[in-house]
Image (cartoon, rainbow, N blue to C red; front, side, top):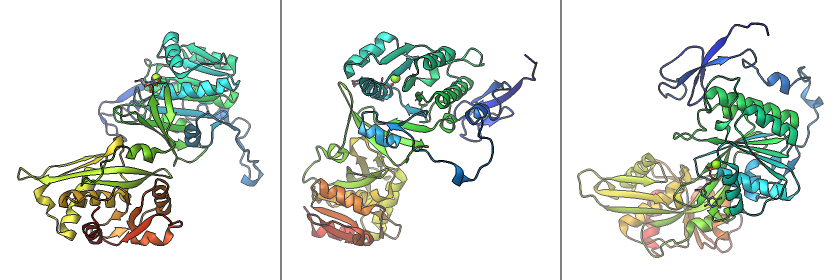
Length: 461
Ligand code: TYD
Ligand code: MG
């Protein structure tokens, strides 16, 4: 082998930022002391992998002469997962599934493989974290598996690649990418260089063999897939599994998708026998709402393109100290402070002498401006101690002059409320004209926060 000059580069182990020299603080993610020196061999430099993937196509051609091909997709057996993937699994695609430990990444992928194996498609599950027995025990909780599901416990990249090439499965799952290492690459297991190299290899493998490869990636406490933010650039699709570990409720979100929209989410519930789909998340989220109590309002947020009804609770009480306390669970505290200031100035409610707590139930979080009106309504309701009808839904964005501004997809939100049997919808006045079906639901358009406060005073439940 000809001797080539050894090159090194520095990578941030948090976000994958590349630099030619060492730095104390990463300019991209601002974390300290995260740069690692990595040898980049001649094959790992710029454009590695690209050559082999695009070989034979390296000539500019007019776009109209390129034949477009409808990707062949196959179902995962879960409507929610299919939707997040953009309609099913695409052959030869590389999908990264990220999420906190214990959130259910291995479980959802096992369930997908069980479905595919049951359909007579060969699938390969590579586990670098658990022994065969552990995987079998988990699989037993989910159900019966067919022999088309092959299990392989291995951490060496070469052996895994060889197994995929030999078995030629429809889908290969690598659980997790952080446990795969290659002896020829410097750095310990889970280091930036190992993960980069393994991901690049799986990309090449997926494109050359047409096997759809799912990589499981662990998430750091900051919430990105460990180290490798750069993994997100290398793969076709990035899915994140989110959810409050204390509730059984899980949301699967597409952050990047070369084969579909990133607006979709899937909602699941963790049960004794694995994850089950939640086709009606609003019903689930509104379960157990208090009736006739002040401070509870139903709001509507959009998750992707999907309207979801959630309960917002406020508790306002006279402050015992000179400095009022404000706490927000599930929404931005600054937004709460802003709404309190607008209510004080435009409606004349003395919130500066009150503690205020906001809670979005069900472990949901949202930063959508359409939540403003429901939060304001909950605050007004608790401040005045008047209950708001449990049959009412409220949404709208509130501006600093106290105006209630229109929000996107108002019609979809109203239809969701109608579908679930709500009798009244309080919405921005400017959205009224865009509502299509109105039977069975009373619409009250609001122009300002003052009108909103008056409305609740006139219409206590
Ligand atoms: P797992 O898929 O192992 O998470 P990850 O791969 O993301 O780390 O999920 C593990 C959790 O899910 C664990 O706390 C147990 C729970 N669980 C159930 O509640 N029911 C089940 O049927 C299974 C398989 C797991
Ligand atoms: Mg796991």
